[in-house]
Amino acid sequence: MASEDEEFTTLFQDFYPSLCRFLECLLGGRAALAQDLAQESFLQLHRTAWSKLPPGEARFWLYRVARNFAINEFRKGQTRYRLFEQVVQVMSPRRRNPEEEYEAQEQQQMVLEMLQSLPEDQRAALLLREQEQLSYREIGHVLNISESKVKIDIFRARTALRECWAKRAKAHRARGH
Amino acid sequence: MACDQSEKISLLIDGELTATEVRSLELHLARCEDCNQVRADFLGLRSQISAYSPLLAPSKPGPALAAVLAKPSRERHQAGWLGRFLGLGDALPVARYATIAALLMISVAIGTIALLRYRPPTEIANNKSTPGADVVNPTAASPDSPDQLASNSGRKPSKGKPREATPNQRKPDSKIKRSKEQGTPKPLPQLQNSAPPTYAFVNEPDDPAATRSGDTDALTASHLEQSELLLRAFRNLRPNRSGRIAEVAYERRRAQQLLYRNIMLRREADSEGDVEVSSLLGSLEPILLDIANLRDKPRRGDVETIKERVERTSLVPLLQVNSMAVARANE
Image (cartoon, rainbow over all chains, first blue to last red; front, side, top):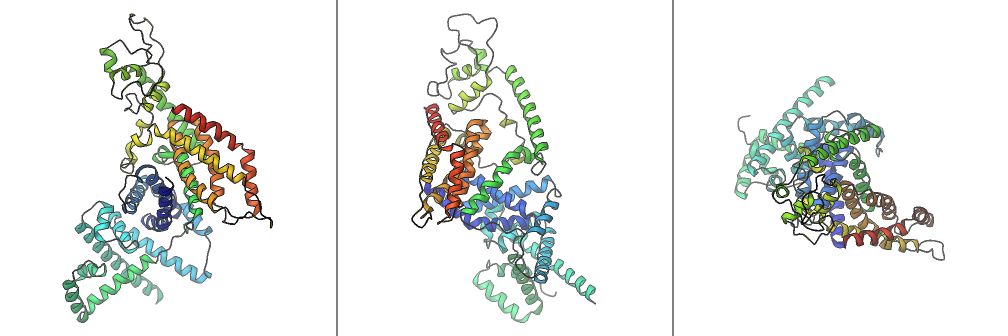
């Protein structure tokens, strides 16, 4: 039991931050909710599946369940957490000077907005690839889809984001002149 | 764009092309400006997405993570799946509790009606029931014994006698408990079973047999005992000559391990409606959390504060009594 708990703690330490980030991007920047769901996923893992999963499977299980939680949240409605997230954003500690902070925030906001313009399945596949460096096979395993679907989803997501990026750059240039 | 190799470029940057395909595409990229631009854009997007840092930085790994794990889980648990289903996760506590209470009452009412109307087929088939069926004995009946279903009807055994004109009052609680202890599928309606299928696929790995098995009691008893030992050891920590507590690394690690289990068992007790165990585990949790959050070489004051809380809440004797009681009940 003790060694199982230690293993679980290690897993938590290794994957909790990245799971939070994945969920936050998936949920359009709802940071507190993302942490909440990440913790809920770990609790589910500990409570139900930890002893049954084959070695190395826990990570994929976590992302799968976390994504399911996120989908449930989408279904529940989008607005409930918005105000709270804004408060969190305002209250969260700042590490850089205000100008840098503002730029970084704007950049992050833009990334989030662009990601939000994608269908959820494409967004999840792209995030697992770009942030978690999972292979197509692993992504397919997490999202329960075929590798060829992963390939298409990621490609479509990138193409859509590229177009979106170009439009924004154009609009930005137009505003500048 | 004259040539469209962007799909291949997407695969290239993900390392999903064969060596031959990579060579051929690299040759193409060397002379095609458009495709080069696509690659640069894709890589730019990658760096933007991978550089994303959470708005609310997750807690640092280590014991603090155990705290983060424990705290929101409790908050969320209060709303529970029902609250989440109803979208009450962030509602005001009063409204949340009121709604949950109202729903529970409705569920209980429905359950009671169902109980009153329900007669297991075996009971109808054989009106005679086993002697001593009202005595809770987990090992007496096999899980699939028809008599068990009959005994679940809650009727007083009346071997050799005609059935009484007025049947004894049913005891749903004891029936549910007996069924749980015997590890059989519950033939009677349960509150949990009225759960809407919102979380069906999230709960896919859930195994009710595992979470509700009789092992839970044994686990709870062992957990209470281990927590008691930890608190005793912690209570006996003495400062050294310099007035500092030498080291609490072991206690910290132990508390962290027990904390996870505590959360699980508390949730289990909550879902089973075991208020006593749930409240005991609930008062143990913050203590475990505080110990888990101590520094390896903590200040004396920090340790003393926790010790005081342990004393004030009389946790050690409470744990001792309860671990014995749970173990005895489990026997």
